[in-house]
Length: 94
Image 1: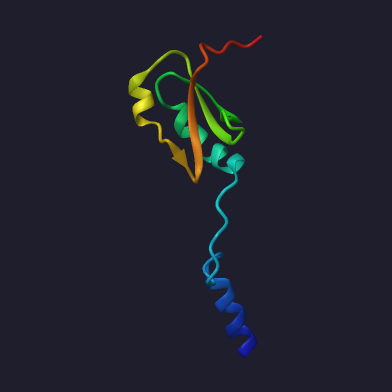
Image 2: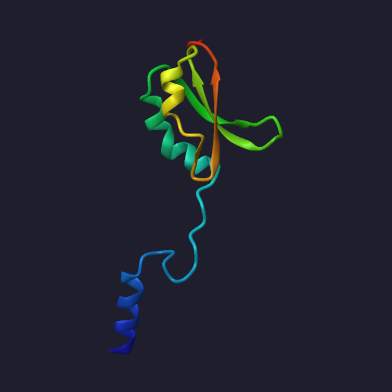
């Protein structure tokens, strides 16, 4: 019966709540999670991963043209990863 109680306790305890901190999402996970929300904003034509000037990976949000109202609502960082906004123009399929 003790084994049943122990198994039930492990099943009920959420992952990461056993005194250890959860690992932050990777930049790939953060990009995948936030891209749909970013793509709904006016003028956003792409969301991907790029490098900052110092070589640090960043989430890159591409705009079709300069849009101060969209820049104003985009966060500077998500899940510990910096967000960089670039004007990339309109995207076209080839």
